Image 1 (tube, rainbow, N blue to C red):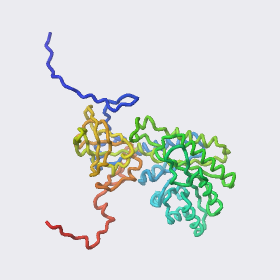
Image 2: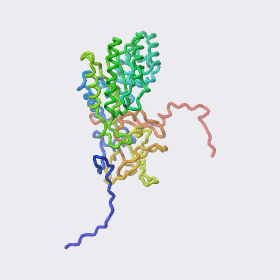
Image 3: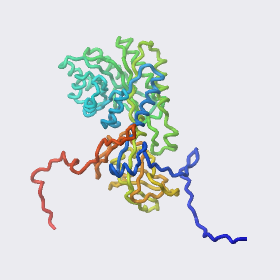
Length: 454
């Protein structure tokens, strides 16, 4: 018998990954390409960190959501939520698909006008409208959603001077069984504040009350809350028609639908727990259709979806700066982007994947950003293989809010590219430079020169 070759014994660490009721994951996923474009090539050409948006995925999300509602209800209109991501290129993708604009400030209103959105296709929401912004909206025949009585009085004053009757709606807040309720916005349904505002609008004779609006929350996981909200909105609309002889032309149910990101502290990943757009569409449309409106009196249904339409169309590419061991023995990996760039890391446990081949052996680690702030944590706990200095990673589902809520703090804001439907790369925003950041600054003459002694 031939003698077997001696091999020394060794201990191999087994990594099963986090466990849930569906079992465990042991594989290490790598993402080297986004819509056919190599991650390494994108970083080489446009720098790191870098936001990447997929035009194909944005259009796919929009049409999927539109189909969910239009197959259930005869009259549906989407209005793109500018605050979610107001890059002009992104907004224009939605406008090309037929979406109106939903804005919440004078800044966003002017961006919509600059994007050639007709004034009568702009919905002006928000509690902070300045008088000059209201005047602009009235002159452009935009839909103004009134948030409070002071705004109502301002519009009445504006109408006297302009001799116009703007089209308005009121924002309604209500108890939908989800707490805390968003009662800081709009007029309350339960205490008749909303009805009081409606009667003042109609009795003033200065405005056309054409709609009702609600937005009950953000990242909403309760489908039933929208069923309750739709029922109360219908009740208010029917009351307007019967008691004030003022039929309501549209019901704006706002947005708030969640993406499939995983919220911090969640037991299961978002892809397994988040309701679909079809679930929300079924709840809202069924409630309106069964409420009792005549077929020719069904109001237009407006949706102001944002996050659910673009979150999974966005990626953040980054590079490893260094690794270190913490006092408790945990591995910490430091990236070249932090919470100033990835604001939503405060809310989500974002999926992070290597962008190059790695070992299959993983270790639980912390991912930090480069900021000198203890709160700069991208992931508090994640199983990944060892990432070496210079390695690249892809952070997934970052398309919503990060490119509007990012900050110039310690580091400058990165560039943004769009991968078109033809897989061509289009630069949407160049990385900021020190010169760009200092352009608005003015240094008084007596502070220009100084001498620091040795």
